[in-house]
Image 1 (spheres, chains in turn cyan, blue):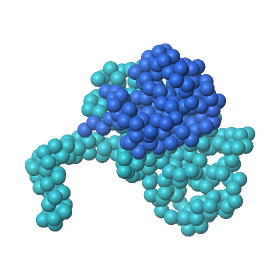
Image 2 (image 1 turned 135 degrees about the vertical axis):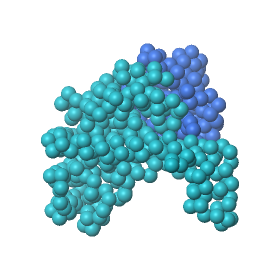
Image 3 (image 1 turned 180 degrees about the horizontal axis):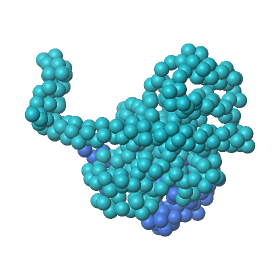
Image 4 (image 1 turned 45 degrees about the vertical axis):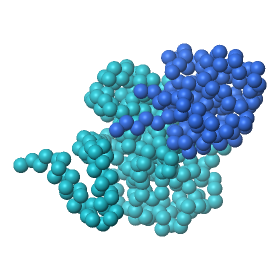
Length: 321
Length: 134
């Protein structure tokens, strides 16, 4: 199984895409490959792109890749789209906007389905980033699903978070709400040729004027015009790349990169503990039918979830003295 | 617990912008529980092969209504083969005269679907013939 890990480290694209698939599909032994590559991770700068459906995240990602390639950087992209809660199927359409990079060996694009994750990403994103990282990509762009106000999991994975806003989505109170608007390192007012864009721009600035920046980074707000005007679009997106590089330098100068890494590492250990402790227990409960029995008893109100959880913990977890 | 899903890429090679059929198929495969990567129109066989490898799909479904299937479909098959990815099945649909079928099968296509094929029959074909690779 370490074969796969070795091939990924050697830059084998097929092996990398297979490893990401194994991560998504929860294939046994995938951990062995991850153990193999983990020591080599932590080199790439991870950019998160989030915003509402149709805000232009994929189109921006495509142009970001173009600008980064012009600056001789290699790029990996993980683009997440939603899984159907009914059939488990998904349509992953982010690649439509990025097809011009398909043959560029300096670019690797991978679509992922959320598979039930609610934070705007897929569970496999964290480790997927590691795979692109050891492939030697300088920058990794993670595009979230179209999000609303609350799906902010991207902050666990990205060094630089870009929140994409478009005009016409609500009044100025939206700009001061908690959640999405708090996590941006860079704001983009996309489709800024449209009506309402100057107002949105001002609202974000007003919101920022009321904010404190303990890390010493005030998120810049960048207006980006329509992609139908390629020259202007490219110029605007180049400004975003400049700010991403400024932010990266800021994180390094102020010694904050480690802090960002720490948040991700914390999330990773949480996830690894879940996989190592909770999932085997759940698998057993499913296999021996206990879980079904528990659901039956609960539906009849014979017990409560808390008592059940205590019983399971007592039965399956060894309590240290 | 393993959770292998069929991953399929739907692509439109060449100069053909009629993608209604491709979209309907993408939707049908989604509803059958598969993960469908849709890549849009006007692609070269090279782009399609490279994308299929990066996405680690089990199947590439090609749609072409312009009459260039005899050139474009085998081109995708060959490019996958050249890159050591001939375990990715290639299937094709569109306006394809029956007299072209054998040539396409000989070129390595695993399935050909023409107007009249029902969505259910396509999903069934997928489940019968495509096993997500181990």
